[in-house]
Amino acid sequence: MAQTVKDYFARIVALAYAKLKQVQITQEINVDRSILTIQGTYSIYRIAIKETFSSNLLAEIEK
Picture 1 (cartoon, rainbow, N blue to C red):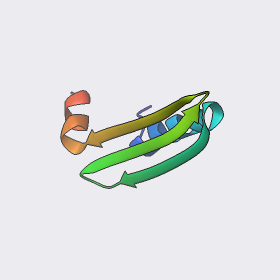
Picture 2 (picture 1 turned 60 degrees about the vertical axis):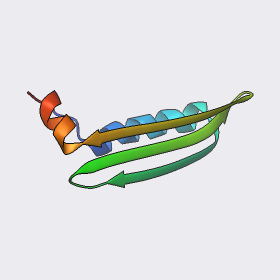
Picture 3 (picture 1 turned 180 degrees about the vertical axis):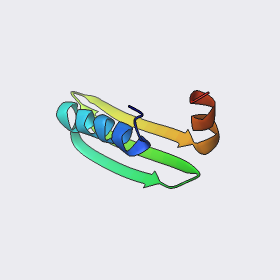
């Protein structure tokens, strides 16, 4: 079963909330590109993650 970008982002967000503290998340999902930004803390570390998909990249992956 093909996984959608929203499903993929939802798994990452759930993991971020489970492992990080002071979590801040922004999502921008549209036809051309999708961006997920996560910021939080883990112990003494500040964590910043940005996951980006574009329609061109997804087309290449599905080949």
